[in-house]
Length: 238
Image (cartoon, rainbow, N blue to C red):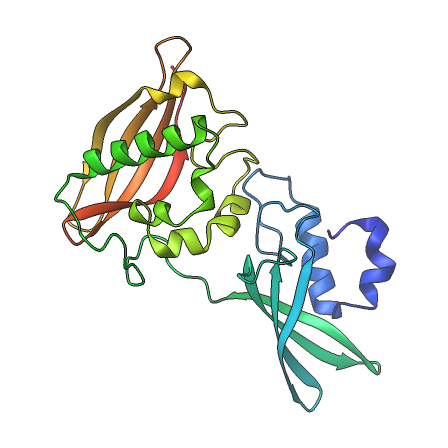
């Protein structure tokens, strides 16, 4: 977003201190983990076309806006930003952008599902999720299209899934860390990595029967008698 060819336009929109800060970031080598200052994510696309100012507070020569970024027709925002502006040279200019309302995806404080839980280990929970998820995806039922997924993942994680996806460098399926889903991935294996009373990690292997396996590191947190998924990372493929 902050590119030399946009400098003249940005001069009229950003406070000098913010322009200087962003200019310094251009001089650093780009990393895949870099987060865009203005959107607070690693990448985005043209579908982020809903920008709504939800509140505005003006105090002298300073102002604070609460801005929602999201998809058209979808009420739940991808993210909510606090945008601070200063009046300089008879114009309002952005001086700071901060993310607000972010919830810890590994907290179950907002979970209500499932109503009835069955005692299970983190390994059993991770494997159960992937057996369900792959059965839905391979049947082209779109596992992410309904609320049943809340039986397996935390509510905070689910509410922020779009944003969590865009924090990373992968633009494919978040749950499989891939562009495509293979039939072979209906074969699911699991192995424990580590576990504490507050959190656990499980190694999930998809496939490996007909094609090379896909390996994932799944983080879970306890909820009642069970465990729920709150983070997924890619591991090396066998």
